[in-house]
Image 1 (tube, helix red, strand yellow):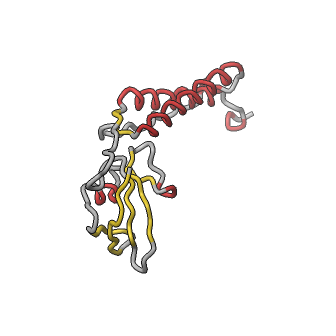
Image 2 (image 1 turned 90 degrees about the vertical axis):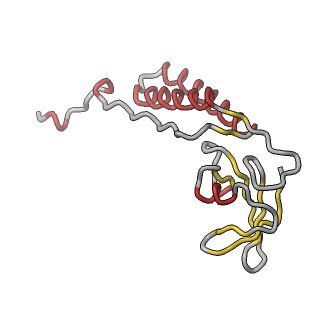
Image 3 (image 1 turned 30 degrees about the vertical axis):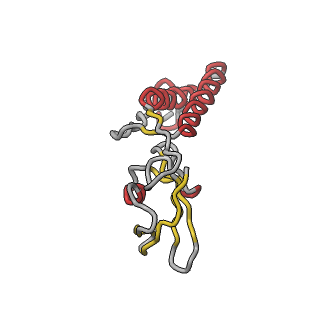
Amino acid sequence: MSRAFVRESDEDAEPLPERIISPHPNLVTPAGLRQIDDQIRELEAARRTARQGTDKSTLARVARDLRYWNQRRATARVVEPLATPDAARFGVRVTLELAGGTQRRFRIVGEDEADPARGLVSWVSPFGEALLGARLGESVRFQESDAEIVGLET
C-alpha cells in the first residue's frame, strides 16, 4: 500500500508556528489585563483536559497559545485613562459625529483587546493612531470622510 494512504502519527506532524509577538509595547487597559488572565486560565484548563486524552495536536496548539499569552502577560503594561481626558488617549472612549449626524463610539485599547466590531480599536492601528491626541471639535478621517470628535470619556 502506498504511504499516501497511511495516516502518519501525531508525533510526525509539523510543529505549529509560534504566534507572532508584536514589536510594540504591550499596553493594556485594566479590562485587557483581565482578558489575558482569563485566556491563560482557559488554556490551562484545556491543557489539563488535553493531557488526559490522546489528542497531541490539541495539546500542541494549547501549549503554543499558552506561550503566547504568558509572554503577553509578562510584558503587559496597564494604562489607566485620565478621569477627565482632554484628548483621545489610550483607554479613552471617543465619540465621533459622522456626516448626517450619526454617531459612532470607539475605545482606544491594546492590540490583544482590539475588536473593531465592538468599537475597540488598537492604539497601533491606522485609525487608532489617527485618533490619538485629537481633541474635542477636531476632525479625523473615518471611512473615507471626515468625522468630528464630539465626546471624550473614560
